[in-house]
Image (cartoon, rainbow, N blue to C red; front, side, top):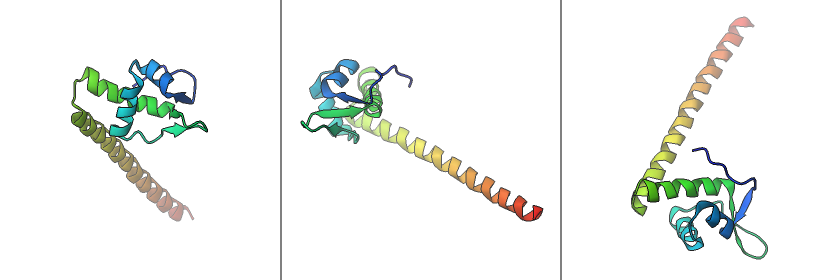
Length: 111
């Protein structure tokens, strides 16, 4: 999902709400329900969100408002998507191990 996020690293709750076009209490609820872990607080204890958090909020918003999933359904869908990404990474790691093993065999033959 390509999105033109403003050129900042961290966003206040109000800035994130304005960008996502939802009220701050909605973001707080999503943060609590979907466990958006990158939330930061500055010295004055204001909530700060990272760019990656906004991307996750956009996915949540899409599931809830566009695809019309329930909160439980959106959680399930996002967990499934995350699991697929982890599986894909594992496939690449296995491939890299096989390539590394092959290169070591070639190195042994060349020596």
